[in-house]
Amino acid sequence: RVPPVSSPGGLPCADSAGGDTGGTETPHAIARPGTVMFYCALLVLGIAATPLANRYWNQFVFTWPLSLIVVHQITLAAISWSKQPERRQAADWAGGAGAGLFVLTCLLYFNLTRQFSLAPAWYFLVTFPAAWPVAVPAARRLCRPGRLAGDILWMVVVFTVYFWASGGVMLLRTAWHNAFYRV
Image (cartoon, rainbow, N blue to C red; front, side, top):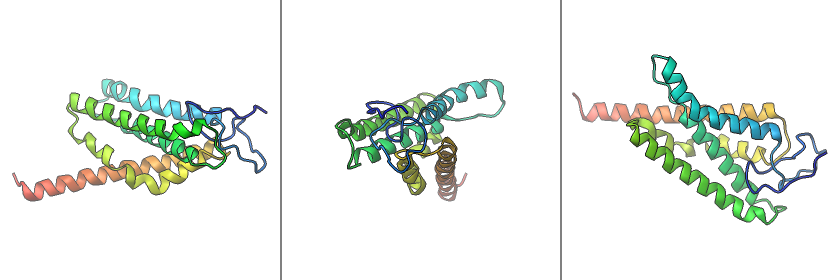
């Protein structure tokens, strides 16, 4: 087994060996390698898929919100990790660093979507709280040993709630706009 390692970067929490710890959790250890790779792959996919998909398809495909929700989950995990009673000194700044990363990511996202004239993109910035009923338990799960399949399932549920909440805001705004500004 690999001993737990403090997590100054990357995903906090969980057992570093990736296996069951037999009931002894290590909330101060870095996430399992499979989980780290999964979240890194989602982050890259969310950024890279938009230009690639739009180059080859006739319809507009917008995947940046996937990267937003990944950073959101990492932030929630860092905050959850920083609140653990068994945490190390690195945890004192991990929650703040995670929150700072999230705010910077949102500002960059907002700036880029304005630069590229993607008007409805702000919907994805205001609907994070809608995903919290599933996002918070999913982030806490990252702080416990588990299986990669469970992490993937949780992320699918979190993204689904987040995506459709954003779609609902867009539909409500469109309906409201059409009701008051009939053309």
